[in-house]
Structure formats: C-alpha cells, structure tokens
Amino acid sequence: MILLKPGLYLITSFIALLVLAVPFFLVQASAPFWASAGIMVLTGTEWFPYEMLFGMLPAIIGSTWAILIALFIAIPCGVATAIVTTELVSSSLASATRMGMEVLAAIPSIVYGLIGLWLLLPLLQASFDLLSGHSLLAAGLILALMILPLITLMSMDALKLVSSTQREAGMSLGLSWEALLFRVLLPQAWPAIRGGILLAMGRALGETMAVMLVVGSLDRMPEPIMNVLQPAQTLTSRIGREIGEAAFGSIHFSALMACGLLLALIGLSISLFAHTRVVKA
Image (cartoon, rainbow, N blue to C red; front, side):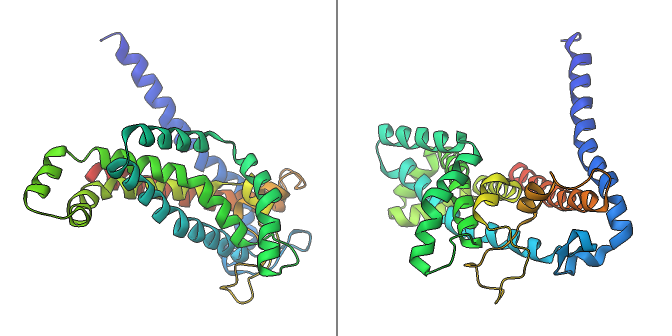
C-alpha cells in the first residue's frame, strides 16, 4: 500500500494538471480576440470574420434552443422508460431495454448526423413545407436521441438504488402504485436523476458533428426568435465548419477559441453542479 501511494499521487496530480491546462489553453488562445473585440461580441448579431465582425449571439441562441428542445423531449421519455423498465416489466425485458440503450449510447455521433440527413431532414421538409429540413428543430431532435440513453440508464440506476424496504413500507401504508411512485420512488431517486440530466445537458452542449450536419450553419437570428424551423448556427457547428479555414494565430482563429472557451466554461459549470448535487444527495 505504501508503494502505491507515490503512483496514486502522480496520477492525481497529472489529472489535476490536465483539468487546469484545458481552460488555460483556451484562455490563452482566445485572449487576442477578447482584447480586440471586447465582451460586447456576446450581444452582437453579425458574424463576418473577413470583415472583423464576430457577433456571437445567434450561435448562443441556437445552442440554447437546440439544448432546450433536446431536454424537453429526452427528459420525460428517458425517465418514463426507466420507470416502466424498472418497476413494471419483467427482468428479461428490462435487461433487453438496458442493452438497447447501451448500444444507442455507444453509437458515434457522426452516425446520428448521417441518420438525420437521410431520414429526419426530408421528413421535416415534407411535414412543415420547408425549403430545407435544416433547422434548430432538427438539431434538437438529433440531440434528444443522443442523450436519451444517458438519461434513461442513469434514471434506471437511480430507481434501483431505492431500497425494497421503502417500497414495502409504502405498500403497507396502503399507497397506490401512483402514490408510491410520486411520494417514495421519485423523491428518493430524483437527486441522481437530476445529476444524469445535467450530465446529458453537458454532452448535448458539446456535440458537434451531428448538429453541424442538420442545423444548417446559418449565422442569423431566428425570425421570430421562437421560430425553430429556420436554419441556424450553434457554437459547436461554427467551430466545426470554420476551424479548418481559419489561419492559425489570426483573430478569426482566436474567435473560434473564444467560442470553445464559452462551451468549456458552461460544460464545466454543469458538470460541477451535477457532481455537487449528486454527492450532497
């Protein structure tokens, strides 16, 4: 045990250094952009790098809408699936469902994007009479499919952790199944479910390839702002499309690093909040 301690300290120090190095790199790489453009770019609406216009608001709003749509669909579907498979169906069917969710979680994101191009975009185009199916709605639907397995699996684990003693106590008190679910099971499992939702939000925030293929990558504000059927842009799709054409060390390159810094800070905040809430529970 004594011999293992130096190795454990070395590994822990390396992980801590890596965690600190990522935001440090992004801050350093994006510093010229912030010094040149200032913080007001967060409210700018025009993105024309060759004219030195770097408005980030359309991409920020696009990312927000895509994540909200994904969570609106994935949270109720994932939690409901977990409840049914954990509490109502046979163990063999529950195992099959879990295996299916694990398979979905292992599929690369580019595959989801290709499925979106092949199936989802033509369906949206025909259903809503659009010029193109590329839209924030398409991005949100793809993200919902991608984070659904994570929410479902973590919700299933959370419900399984509720002890059988509490179930038996609720039934002995004459609670119906619905009352047992909402008064005993979900309150006990909710902290872990909430942590899974926040982690899924972090994955949705950082997804690039699948979103880039279906969102349209059009740098403009939705008109009106509630219209999710228009092509739009997200922070990740912008980085994915433009990083190859941005000259290293240019203001354009630094602006894309600034987009990455925003994503990293938001994702780090979500992960820390999820971990904190689960640990406290």
